[in-house]
Length: 353
Figure 1 (cartoon, rainbow, N blue to C red):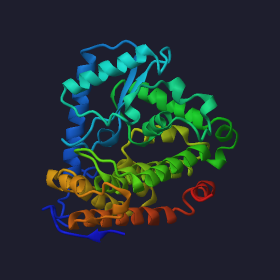
Figure 2: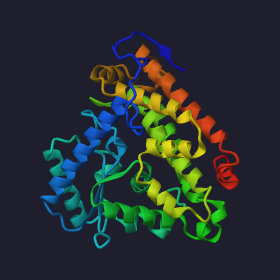
Figure 3: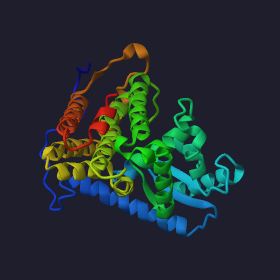
Figure 4: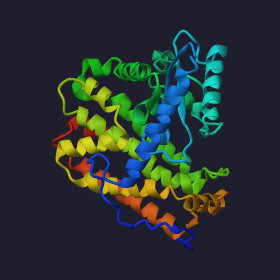
């Protein structure tokens, strides 16, 4: 439960949004964010090309850059994939990671948090180690990177390396069961996706740590929109794959190149369901809100810093954002419920059991 307190920001969440002539960018803020992201991705590619790094397989942006919705406030969440000939935890791989991050810092990009999954490199061999299949005690760093490469990733450099990694990850998830019984769907991947989302939700409920640009309220808003969109986009992609003969692997690989929002757009278009316009409008309002520095500052400064302060009072703009995220999630839930008869019964069953 949230209590609406003082209104401390000037952003109006109900401000009408002008349509964009391109059907893929109906809202100006999404077009602006996409252009900003693509410009920075090109800068990253050019900088890496200018400084060859032997042993580097791919430099993969995740988060807002991977979703093509970055702004000046965005961290450059980067997964560094090195060639399998290098041990992911070896000195050569760590040196490559450090050189790459120094290069990005030199461009003026803000690096991710020092304690997260992006602080170490990885290899396809590490991500796809058969011994890790179904392990509940797997390293969060490895599990997180693997999921990130499926949720919202985009190559800043080495697109073939990213494609190879995604293909290998799908093959890893297909081990045994998908190949033998494709009609049963991608059960392990679905289980891991749900585990990732639910674990993230549980973690964020009580994580009150804060720094200058990140705190509980801001994370809750991101959870309700961008984190949820990652989850919903992959659910939609898996659901659409379940309609196809065989395991739909090539369809999934093609879909992994889309942003989470575009995955939902495609699924709604294939279903002839107009609910996407509702989801897109709510999401555009969120992206617009995060461009407001004053609102971001308010969310950080007014966030709870201790467990006894939960749940906190929030300002009217934050309450409106939270209300919008609930509406977005409700629209997606309606969409999934309406897919009975479209998506396979086995896939719909796997979302519950």
